[in-house]
Image (cartoon, rainbow, N blue to C red; front, side, top):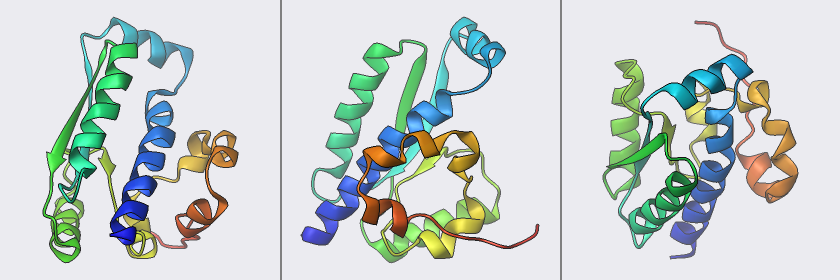
Length: 146
């Protein structure tokens, strides 16, 4: 149960840190986003415990402050191995269906090549707001080529 709670806390922290980064950009991109009808962000989540309900509650709060943003949640398998398998299918297919993935604390190194380096988009400004051990666990030095 503690592992699920830690995973949920990590995912909420990731969501809180990632949403401003997803919405960030140059003045022109922000203007376009405001003028657009709705920007949709799709999040992969699970249904273990209250994970899904808490994500929806937080997403509703965020959307209330940002009316041009719609957050949808894809309910993924409860078993970590099944969820990882589903994520790998999305990555191999280069599917644009998901924008944010809630991941297990042991996956960052295995999945790093599939994710965006948030430091390139201003994440450094938010790092101090999070637990150092969470940031350390989820910061991966990657050297690969595509």
